[in-house]
Length: 223
Image 1 (spheres, one colour):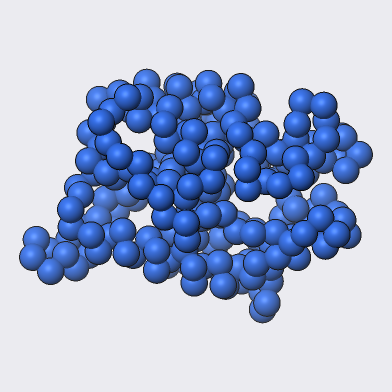
Image 2 (cartoon, helix red, strand yellow):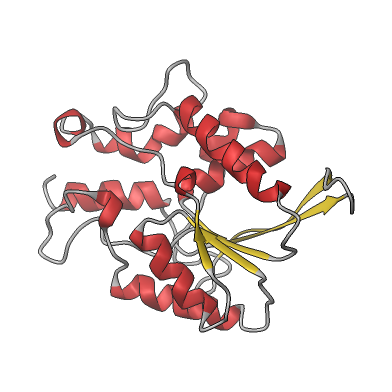
């Protein structure tokens, strides 16, 4: 899953100074509650999030009181942008469409982490989770960029397909991994669901991508 809607722009219209610590919005908590109801009959024997507050809060709501510990894998934190001074030179287009440039040499997100280095951080962490044979059904709550890195790798497109895999707030991706019973070697990867949202499953109200929406917010608040 991707975390639910987060408060990157505060109620007073100012941008949150540190996106790493933003909470969910009221709408985000409702998104997570709807996803919790959708997954009410799903069995989870393990739950993981990146540890950032927006993933912790989303996971807690979606788990809905299940007696499943929530583990933290910090390498699954979102791709990191540059500092405020570096970001000040960026245009809304730089934010909205950076994901589509992920495969370009030395491409980075918001003057911060390189997409290639980001993938090198996320994919081994995800593989380590797959290598653990002590679970069969996992809830993983991460971020749009993290999910794109994992999905594009599974689909074989790599960074070239990064931008084509939209991840709406609080979306669900369902992936089966067929593995050998002893060695745990993954034989097949099957994507059963992609970018599923409980509140708008056929995307009638989602005409912009998440990053386009954020860029529009920044423009409307003069930032």
